[in-house]
Length: 183
Picture 1 (cartoon, one colour):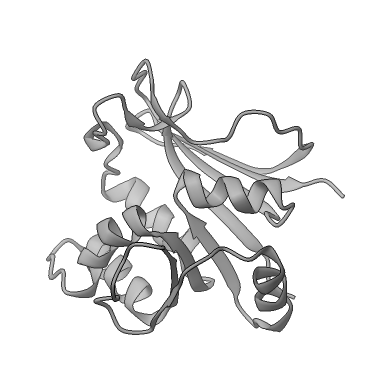
Picture 2 (cartoon, rainbow, N blue to C red):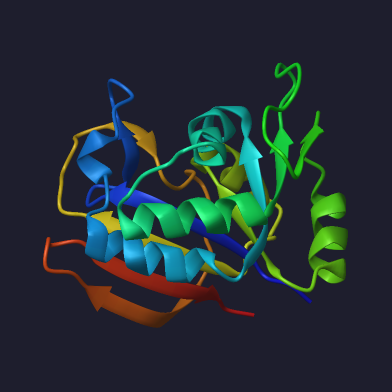
């Protein structure tokens, strides 16, 4: 059975974007991006909401000479993508399916039938999976920034006990934390 993994790059005060919607403060350097690539390599299917999908779709055609960027583009292109949106007319990338609604039971079935792990991106869609009890692993890259408000990486009103399974610090001040949902 595959795991559903929520990964977020977040500020130290818990935001994926600041109050103006900017996330330039969170751009990983080569060292961090290389680790992100290793985290994403086991993912066979990404689950996205519309906004995150539109940001990530650039990887379909991005040709960047930096080794970590080139590697991530290949990882992203090889994975299946499921986009949940009521407003998106059509998808623009290969290996991508459009679903109109997030159905927890369908995601449970996908986890049960998948040979590779699933990744969920974006705090809004992840909140639905969190509330449905679907997230198995939590991966956070904490950027060395306080942004004072914006789009939170986690929803309010939840209580889940987690177990720390991995951590790492980077030369740029970023910190990686991986948790597992306790049974």
